[in-house]
Length: 74
Image (tube, rainbow, N blue to C red):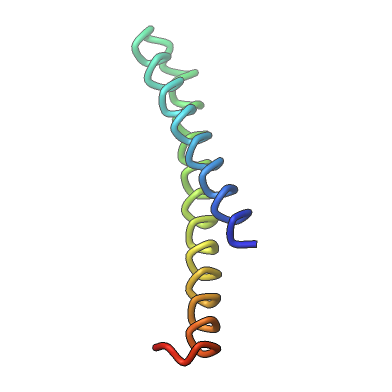
């Protein structure tokens, strides 16, 4: 489960990075409308990446806490 959530978060980060690069290229070609649309898409992917990263972190923290109780560690 943790690996899956971390992979999903990484995929969203990659999508956001790709959309940012595409938006920058469009802006560089003075295609501002397409650049703006791609920037919006990049922000949406970045928001999903953040949420997925938080979920992965929360799951990992919960797992680590349970594992610590099972072994007697703090």
